[in-house]
Image (cartoon, rainbow, N blue to C red; front, side, top):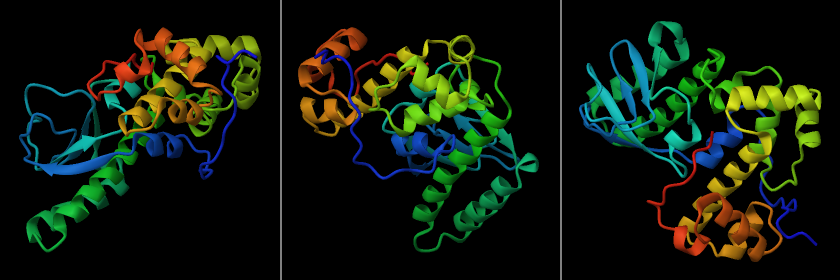
Amino acid sequence: MNTDVPIFVSDRPVLRRDRLSALISALRPVATLCAPDDPKAALVLTETSLVLIARPRAAPEPDAVIAARLDCAMPLAQVFHGSPDRMEVAMGDCPDLAALAQVMTAEAQANRCGSHLAMARLFEATLVLVLRRAIDASPPEPGLLSGLSHPRLHRALVAIHAAPARPWTIELLSAEAGMSRSRFMADFTDRIGTSPLAYVTQWRMGLAHVALNQGASVRDAARSVGYETAAGFRRAWLRHFGALPLAAAPADHTAQPFT
């Protein structure tokens, strides 16, 4: 048996198969309020817009009113590799966002019990709105958001995110997308910037990296992303990261981008 080939293991609840649910579930974003001028702020509310900052910057966002840091299981900069470092949504273009901003502003001004907790959870909701708007805008740069904006290609990405342990092949993924094999391969590489099976591996390794950081054994991490044996998983990890998984578990390990 070729133990480098993942097997399908499913013991998780099935999420609705939309473009963001499985992705957000894997990211597990946790917002923490911070000073408006905090250079590490990832979500920043101004009087007219909400800004998502995927990569930390030296200078704070100008005109910030309320801000939050964002801790995710996988770094946004890696997951959304190729996307702009800064994504902005104007309040006037998104009534739902404007409504959330009004609630956050009211909570900040009133400073009632539980306000910080409520604002943090609202910031997590705004992340979904920003990413949804970015997908709707069909970004031209190759990357995950560009792929998710494709009318058919996104179906394959959603399937990968929802069931990373399934033994994906080009035939299965192109069938998910409802595309011919050749068209699927060409469009995937053009939109994402890498081949379909390379993306599958990157996504699996990212999830396994999270599992190891949270204390899972190599065997459990391997099975969670579909590898039958720890040995097969170690070989795949070594090819991807250039080191064995136990040595790569610290959170500051530099992973390959999820392009």
